[in-house]
Length: 377
Image (cartoon, rainbow, N blue to C red; front, side, top):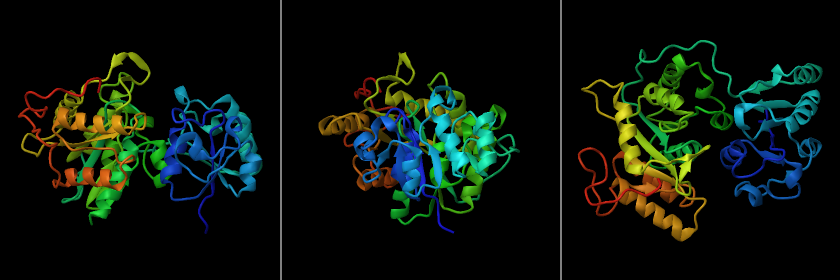
């Protein structure tokens, strides 16, 4: 059976800031993306709008996407509050009436809308809710993963800094290094790409750690290295609970700290500056230790992954150097630098990397004396 041919629904929102799911699918999906639906940018190439997806056309209507062979519509944006945008409802209804499968990662369930449910019934269309968690999950802390498997978790200075991207690039780099590795999806975009996973932010709080534990233990049966997609940030006032549950449930052996080098303040909270990178290293390492046995090896941040998309070449080079000085850790941008950057992160995780030149780690895990943290990070 042929795989899906996907159209991305981004009506009025196909931008770098608002089309996170679409951008992830354009960059990493293993199936063809045949079109992006956004009448406000019709006629453009996807790459001209968001930087990825060269050759994928932006079209004005669902009919044009269907004419290009689409048999699945993936909601490519995440509106505040997770509601289905009003402009999307008639397009989704048209798709469902036509028998086209819909994939949605929004918090609002598609079939909870009576009009959309009626359209799906009329067209016999399937809806795949990417954020729907399994019906039965355990409380975490009761299942051990396969001996010998190693777990890496991407963690962030903020929400939406590139944790999924880093996890996918790191998985590929580990495979290039000859290790068997698997990507564990914990959010709707990762699930749309990988075809499996649990959207951790849709799990009842008591079972977040259990869901993460289940994902990691199952993945550990298939690979030597398990690379877990991080969510939120421990320092974000809205998302920290999800981050902590995922941190404890996945019980990582190593952490990679992800940061948007062009962002000085917390997403959605302009009153909150981001913490310095060295402080974030300490915060994550301490939090990871809370649920580990005292005699167990402690999880350490092994590298810093920067998102430098907002910076020019000189700014990116400077940001990478500053991150290395601030933390005493290897720093890379696996998108801007490509495989060379991702391979540098993999060497650090594997223990083959070296600290930033001339910088060491002090006993408490912060940058060595005399080095300044990356200001605003």
